[in-house]
Amino acid sequence: MLGKLTATTLLLAAGLIAQQMTAKPAPATAAKGFTLAAVGDLIQAHPQMAAGDTAFLPVAQLVQGADVGFGNLENSLLDWHTFPYAPAAENGGDELNGPPSIAPDLKKMGFEMLAHANNHDTDWGLAGMEATDKALDTAGLVHAGTGRNLAAAQAPRYLETHWGRIAVVATTSSFEPMEAAGAPLGEALGRPGVSTLRTTLYHLVNQPQFDALRQIYDTQPERPAHPLPANIKDFTLFGVHYRLGPAPALHYMMNPNDLSEILKGVREGKEDANFEIFYIHCHQPGNWSDPPPDFLRTLAHSAIDAGADEFVASGPHRLRGIEIYRGKPIFYSLGNFFFEIDDQEVTADTWMERTHLAPATTTNQEYEAVHLARSFRGEVWYQSVVAITQCEHGRLSEIRLYPIDLGYHRSPADRGVPHLAPPAEARVILERLQKLSQPFDTQIEIQGSVGIIRP
Image 1: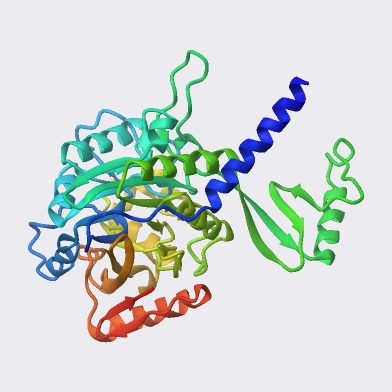
Image 2: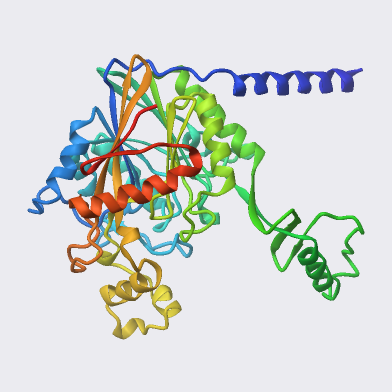
């Protein structure tokens, strides 16, 4: 009897959750005319507001002119001359860093809320993550995505404004294993870290490909101990998951526990806020890909169904498309806002060795020049937009897209800082964004050097 009751309870709970997820999303209730300026990744090596770069100031004024400025901080903020800890053995691709003075600099630019959830959060270990959080706290910047345990990392954070209370929930699907925050284990403390969304990648293959891969599997030494059933539809070979499908493709499965906990945070955030931002850092399926991974659209729709008013993603260092779902904007990647990878003062020897450079005779900037040429060669990595969303009566009324140029052709000392794109380049950026947004049936009107979306 108890088993039947338990099963019935689980079914009812599942049905209730399903109803919650399919119900009409709660409207934004921020005051009339509320505007949000959203940008992509902030990889900032030096403070900018007093740097004398007059071409940067009009970009900062776009953020300052909105009621709330939002972006994703992707580098640690610490003084490595006095920081008493070594960089972590695992990192997100480089030991991204900048001085703590960047935090108040971002505040002066108009940023008030930040995501701090990405694959670089523990480049300098948990101590570096905590030092960065402290710098943001000291500057009065609201940030989400990291914390002293899993609950803290997943929790919504709030900004009090005269427009109402603004919430942000942040997570990352791209991360190093050591980054993940953890819940308490019995009497043991929870693990500090990042809110993570685990995914499993399946390579879909057609029947001939599946049969060929199975033949390879059957020749491996471990095959007698782990024989495959005759009618199996997926298996793992050399650490790669394969699944039979109609055509070759990439398919991601989200971890259901992570997804449930993250969406709970979204619902909680909206219960106590007038407007809510959901952010995810997502490199999948790779920086090379214009389309987002299949799971990201599912996640975006689920987050909005749970109460998010704006879905913002970044990670691949390039623009991806824009979708309007149930009257709310989804930015599948806003690319970069700062991209000062040439100006990193500290680079690990291991990264130089991987590019066949001798650490003893190679400067950090020489390494970064090679890294740039191999991984981020071309203007696409240095072109993005500032997206300003305006709401009227709790509904999206307009999105204005301002193209920015981060200076791929500038000198290394000046590269990676946003300027307003000149008219010809602005049109190139907006036309690319039009094309990227076509699969989502999003119409972007180009007026001069500004893109406009109206639902």
